[in-house]
Image 1: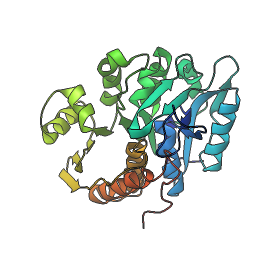
Image 2 (image 1 turned 90 degrees about the horizontal axis):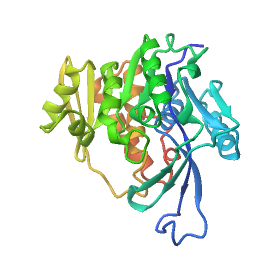
Image 3 (image 1 turned 135 degrees about the vertical axis):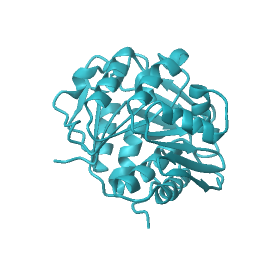
Image 4 (image 1 turned 60 degrees about the vertical axis):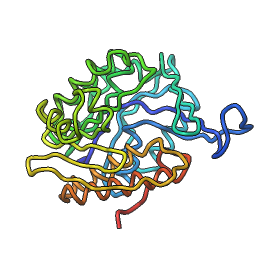
Length: 295
């Protein structure tokens, strides 16, 4: 089977209070799954692309739930292994986009290059990994580098710089090697500033492109833009009030990638990404409100 995209990364069980409540006050929590790469896989699957997700989950009920949910979304999970000794990671959500991770010692934090055995990475049209994989442990970082090194299709990276992880204090050092090996970089403005220094969005995109990516997409507060060999493309956006802003970047990525893999223009991809990113913020879930078409 030829995959449009294969992704590598950790997915956690996610707990969130109902809208308008907090972890402190809620008497019940919403249970969901959350992971940058698998979020993007769900979006791409809903848009009709063939995707596979590579990872490791604990041999626990949280892992069972994630595996079943992603399989039900049409994501191929045959290369997701289970760890009887380490748990599935956990994310607690709070209002306003604040999160706390419990992923130290998780099953995915011990994943190394061996997880790629038998995975048709070289045959995939595209691969996706984010900087989070570089930050959850030395073995996952090595796996991410091996993943990008084995790919022959479009290599996609989102820096996803995060606090509170094993490698967060060295996040620039650990994530830059991923960027050096990618063809398409999808990043937020603040991430590019941390990675490449101060400057306007055009300068930041050019600095990123100088590391190797042929296409650099920048997600900002009032616009999304892309630098490519064909020039600069920019789309103004308006951010409406969000029920839950977490996952909007992953949804944007899915919309953008779907259009580009289907031969669409950068301008069309920016519009699709913006639409998908806005859609998921309407529900307290990273993926439940993702659209099933771009029309």
